[in-house]
Image 1 (cartoon, rainbow, N blue to C red):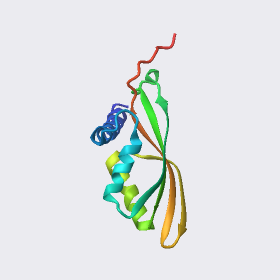
Image 2: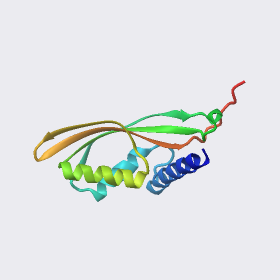
Image 3: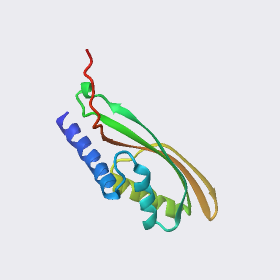
Image 4: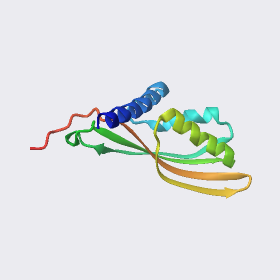
Length: 130
């Protein structure tokens, strides 16, 4: 279990570094996703929605208290450009948990609708169960 905890901590720390570097503050992962577009001129953001945060684990479970950050993205571009964007998103954000992915292709362009989740440390105080 200590190895799992250390691996999870590294994944969360990598994502928090991405958030801090993007200047987005707590929970605003949309700006980080938008900033990736600067490195991928063949990809256009057509929709962005930040989903409400939700608890991922409870401190009582023995794991760190985590929050799940959700994001809906709509992207347009060629298939290779979209795949490069997704690879870069995974590389920069650490682990990305894919909830949904839907690709509609009309050559030469495609539209990719995504729902992704990332994890961060929950800084809110928790009440202990009685």
